[in-house]
Image (cartoon, rainbow, N blue to C red; front, side):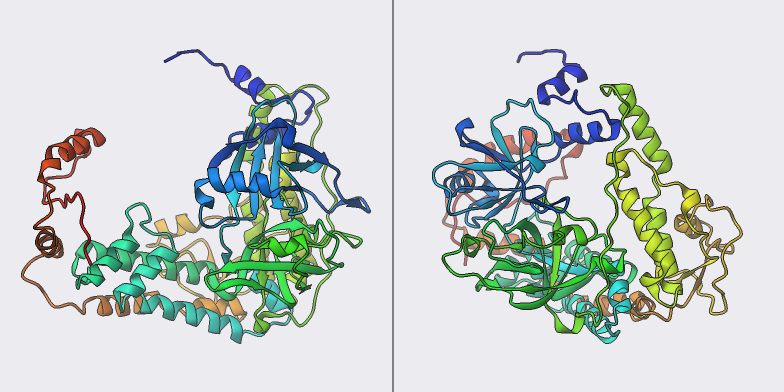
Length: 578
């Protein structure tokens, strides 16, 4: 092994040329881009790289962060990217040399072509020929409501009943998880719980062999804990699944077929490709401004149009005075995910104009950035990061204001939140002195746990404490639960309060524990009976000559301090067990 001492400066110089960047915050972000997680990489010829112009209009970049690729390049990705095999995504989030963004299939391109736009190029100077895959549109992601989106929809005249109905359905589905092994297996698979241990497969296989995993204390406790965590996600974060909704990558229409306020949205499902048509709701998280939720028209495209071959994506029009992604909480197309809803019950009765925040110019120090400049920026960022404080304050005031998120104070906080999001890249902090005073009490749905006492007589008066008094004191309240809490909570009469109070987690947990105790006590443990079953089925299979080899592998793969105590292990070379 070649042992070479590497200094940080030498490593950064190999990544690319950052000398032209005069902002410490921006320079740190660009360097960090090279260290973001990637799933795989493919190598393509340098001749395949093409630079194409951005689509700009009225000072807006409609193609901000997206490019295209030819079928030949995409085929190489399908072959070399393990996550794409069998799924064949047509939308990829990539990192190549100093470029970052999303590329989509353009069936009109011939040969090997990877088309990058100027908006995708973050820095120059890299000589790496690998196209690194950061993500792919393998399937449509589920769409979950959250408190920000629910509050805005409520203020846009969506009634309470659809939210309560969706939450009740989600809780009932969790309750049914413990009713049967197949429900439990589906739950683990959908929520990616125990994926490395193949927990979903194990439970399903045990069921086919005639065993119920509930008989095993560990597996039963795992299920009950996972279900309770999901219930708490719904109760304390309002994370509610929308069946008629997707979360997808966004790109720009390269063909020009989409008109202003039109989208093309298609998803590859088990039964085939589903294309949305008609009016749909579209948004992006985080959403604090009422204009962050818009209604647009989804259309089909002819079969001879290149968009027809794309799936698991929402395609935005390249026309209009302003690009639609920027209207949705300042989104772009370099990998942002957009939420699309086609549930008529969640359509807003009114639409608010989108926010139009000025694009902040990063701090310019007038010279090349040095390591000390970036270190100082990180310290400044940690001292002045107000993002969580603004979001919490916005939620409190939106609950108390008659017009909710449409209140001028909430509109101001939405703008400050946008600036706080950009702080890490601009170096411009949001002063706490710009924030309004927070009220003495919070709505009950912000309570950190079930032990909080709700005061029905508390008022909404503003606190006389200075604004730099910590808002985030939930952990301290729980730690001091024997004394009076520093934060007082009142029952909110808005939809978030109703959703919060509709779930009794203690009652729910008692119900699933009762359902889990359905199995009669057995003379032998589950693992012992599984071992007996497998031994019987594998009685005529030659496998004992692999015992010594298996022991060697086991001993080499785990440190002695981490090895579990010995117990019967299933060691089968080849078997077809039905």
